[in-house]
Image 1 (cartoon, one colour):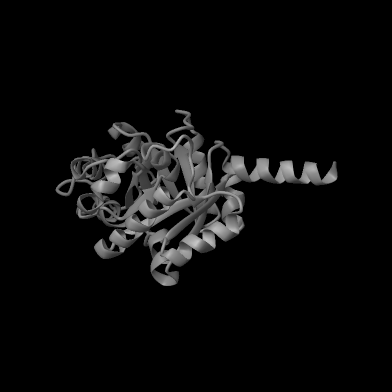
Image 2 (tube, helix red, strand yellow; image 1 turned 30 degrees about the vertical axis):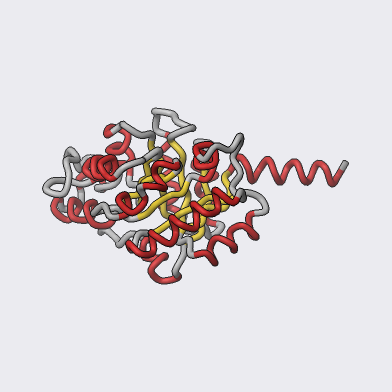
Amino acid sequence: MLEKNKLRATIQKKGYAIGTCAYSFSPDIVQIAGYSGMDFCRIDNEHSWRKDDSLENMIRAANLSNMSTVIRVDRDSPYEVRKALELGAHAIVIPQIESKKEVEDYISWTKFPPLGKRGFSNLNQSAHYGLINSKEWIDWCNSEIMVGVMVETKTAVDEIDEILSTKGLDYILIGASDLSLSLGLEKPEMNHPLVQQSIIKIIERAKHHKVYTMLGVGYPWIDQAKNYLNLGIDMIEVGHDYSILSTVWRDVGEQLR
């Protein structure tokens, strides 16, 4: 009853995965992204968060449209990690990681014993509400869910090899905006030489450690996405619902006026 992780399978087959991001808590937005052919949707729970049934319905909408979900939860919260996994996330990512020890602690929250210390209950959406064999589901969770961390500070870039060497780490999400500020810039500047040097370093070291990389790009989406795919990014996140809608509405309005 449990399938292989579609997101991992897509990267292994094509060499990359193309997705987007949702900040609003609309299952419709997620489902449209899936029907539009996106491989994944990152659902944000760091800067956008509602503790109700919204996330459950968004993951359900992604499953209906044959799309993987990447859930970003806030740091220092084993509770949020567990809830996202029980709701059926295909991948999970936590922000503001700066050391191997932090990565190890985080991974331990995502794995059942003996690999970690995640608490067990199969009465949830991920386990089909107890209708899947418990051992099969535990093995699936420990092996198929993709675990990622965000690298978005100068300290994390300096420690990148230690971070990437952590057993159980599947991918790195590069946070270019916070990285810009951490490097001393006055605002997010993804194209600044200092930021670009860090991005290239992370991609190169991740390839060495056989860890996937992920990066979000803004407008003009296609040009930026092609650039980073050519650099070796494995998962490219093309805009998010807020930026895509506001850009299209603004451009259409300006052209009409």
